[in-house]
Length: 209
Image (cartoon, rainbow, N blue to C red; front, side, top):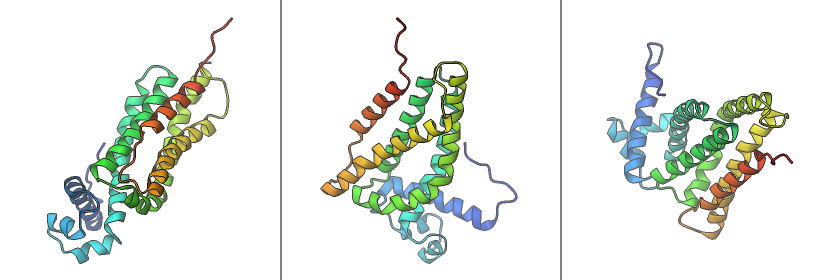
């Protein structure tokens, strides 16, 4: 859910929001590689030098904007996930949706594997704090399932952390292979299939008798 503007927002924060909105517009239209800081500055009537005051380069701007938009998306996704029936359905819906959202962000930005390699370090740096919130959310689902006897009791926080780590590792493994091969795009099909198989294994309960 988009955060409303409030009276305590500084001019600097308000301008960063405007820059972010302009950046999304340009990245969607031209892609990250073809977008310039001049393009973004023109949308909001600034010069390129003004953008350098806030961002080192367009890659940093892309990552910060993507993280901010991603947090809004995840907030809504968590509300939808809570409405699903059954722990496996909830976990898979959440992991599948966040995986596809990530892929969509890369597609909107028309990001090649080579460019992705440049932006990932900054992405991981900014994502780390929010990852803890995601872990806590999944852990609560698992704790509830353990309490109901649907899932064998264990360390819910550790399982949640592993689910996120494995999901992200599957994404980044196929990305690194594409970078090493010099591919122009990344195919995530098998990564998604592997993640679904893993979730089904974790939450599969053998029939009695």
